[in-house]
Image (cartoon, rainbow, N blue to C red):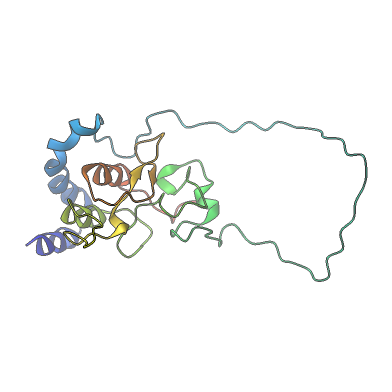
Length: 186
């Protein structure tokens, strides 16, 4: 029944209508985390980078010979953590476009089960179906670590590594990442 319902939500074609169907089901859990459902709103203002010139004198000049030239990787096409967001996107300042994430943390973008570059209602529905699942042994209720995260903070959408159970906290982190993509400006 849950699988049929989640496929139906994905086929609606209107994410806002599907969100309107999924989010009320999560309303009873809002108080457990002490958080609202303001999707995509950070809890703190976005930080502003400030450049500071620093001079560090050295006493000797050294030279290192390189036998072959080594190309510098292109950060736009590099995805160091394999989460589907380029390192350049994760270093950006807009969370909605994959920014303000760690390019070496594979758990900070909640795009499941098959990464498509966006956190959608379908992703949230799949996590809801797995609610209550645990790592086991044996795994209970279709547990899969792709749907399991921890709240890493400081923002409600910052997710961290799995903790062994798909809980309300996992679903709420995913709800707060709803609409985040990795095809944005780089």
